[in-house]
Length: 344
Image 1 (cartoon, rainbow, N blue to C red):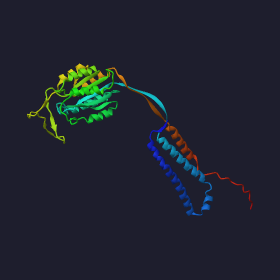
Image 2: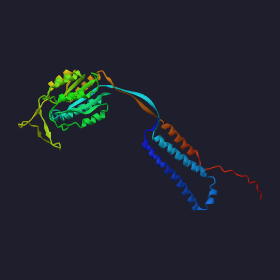
Image 3: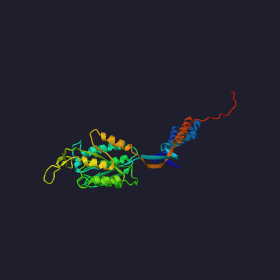
Image 4: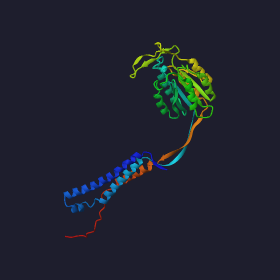
């Protein structure tokens, strides 16, 4: 097989006709200048030592060298070499609570931003694991399917905010069910769900859902964000200016508390562990250590065709042509005819 790694550079080849035209123009201008200087025939006889043919050949050598330099710049690649690429790791889904209670500022700058920062730090530690994202509030949906592209996963994470899901609430149960459905593999291991929330789910029994997920081979690690004492939920306008705190129908300020017991039971039922988010982020290291010690599976195994660079040969040809052009002189040897010996 054959290809150019940088095909765009081949457009520079359009300069070669322009350069050839410049040489033709230069020769014509030189000839006209000589004609203005004096008798053209006489000047040609006086300049017999200069070879017009060699001047043309020097120009041709420069054009050819320029041609091969452009081809070398485009990096021609010939042939292929097959290389087997294998990745091993886990399937990891991260479910992030984006409900309004995650705007509480009992942990700086707020619960949601703290959680997103921890997720980025955790993703940076993964090597070969497939990662996906689930956003949930009153509803849950798959924000990013399982992927090996960590950059794309972080990009989807940037869009996760408390305005992402308009339905109020904290549907932890639905988030777990979405995760179970997102794990398409049939084997009952290598499935990990990291659930980050303040744990306030008052609609269903997330512990029972976690027990069913464990039967499907899903291990759930839970991370609690916030404080157990309870804090108000600040509200902001479109410009980011705080307008007050969330209140209930009676006008009382709503207090949001971290429900550690629910998150602990979810982790216990599924064979995982519970961690409380701390400013020092020590829990991230523990989660990564636990996951890295698990049995890994082959996530991707394929043969890649690797092209071999061959620009060196073209570059060598261009250098040889330039050397020949530099050694080739414009002067030619004149044959001296024997005129005999004249005596006065």
